[in-house]
Amino acid sequence: MTFIGNAGHASEIPSRMERMAKTLVSGYQGKRGVPAGAVIAILPFNSSPRLSERHIGEAVSELLTRPFVLDSGFKVVERAALAKVLEEQHLQSSGAIDPESAVQVGRLLGARLLLLGSIDKLGDRYQVNARLVDANDGEVLSAAYEDFASRLFEEEARPFLADVPEQQTIGLYLLYNYRRNGNDLASYQTTQSGACVGGSPCGASATPRSFSLGLVGGGIRYAPLRSWILDLSVALLAKNVRFADTSSDAVFSGELTSGDVILLRGTVNRSFHMTPRFKGSLGAGLSTYKISTPSVDFKTTVSPSIRAGFEYRPQPRVGAGFFLNYDFLLPKGTDTRTPSHDALKIDGLSFEPTLAVYF
Image (tube, rainbow, N blue to C red; front, top):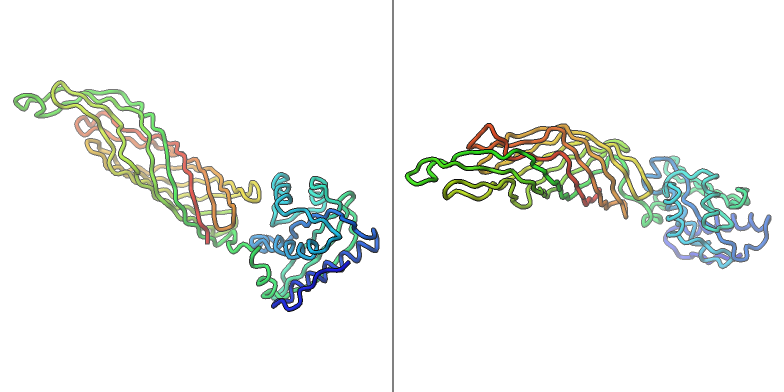
């Protein structure tokens, strides 16, 4: 078999990868003969957790794919098809894949052969072990080994590496916090001083009503340890809302509306992989509300909170998430004209889509 060379390339990595491919194919030919269009699936190489955070195993499989694609003796499974099967089988595209799972993936892809292996880093060098395996019975048909200077390897593999690790990571995000508030409080009577003829008090009533509350804001996430995230956010009212209707015996009638609303939330979260691109999250912390509303006395409330959701990462630096939050202490506000009556109640459940960038 003849592989297309890489003469004149600034890095030695492509030629070393080509040499590995030649060794693997030569070993295969010694046992099975000419491939004659055999379908081969090139899986992400196994690596340590620290290396897998940067997708090192995925990068070496990408670099080894090139000589096999350029050689007409093999038909290489497309990367998109491979990623789809890995996701369906709940296998990490950048983590460890055991031999039994690899054989199952090969069968689902209709591949006759599997190229898999491992990569480790010792000092300033990467050590790569590769194996060509029969997808039907798992027999190892050939093997190859190379080691690379880490600087040269990372330079060549840069397009495939994730520059954002899963710890010591900072994320900035935008959020929209939405909740539907039943505000199921009883109607009550009050008075409006000076509202009637001659300045005498008039009877008035107020009827709390349900309302939607939308807050916009942003936050910061920090991962001090793998799978643990500290999250701090702030959100402000996007638009004033009506939360009670009022009427009186004379000229006073109308509505009670919200003023400034500020939500601060801090949580500690445990994250976990659902699929290679989806991450789940469960957390708990504290939320505080500060509401300045005309005619309503609303004391700042601090509430224990829980949080659950998921985030989709189409690429390592960008994430789109959806979260549910629940605050256990429901904030209430009393009518300043009749302090014994509640006019406003915020429900505990809220929905929160987010858009994040990670560094």
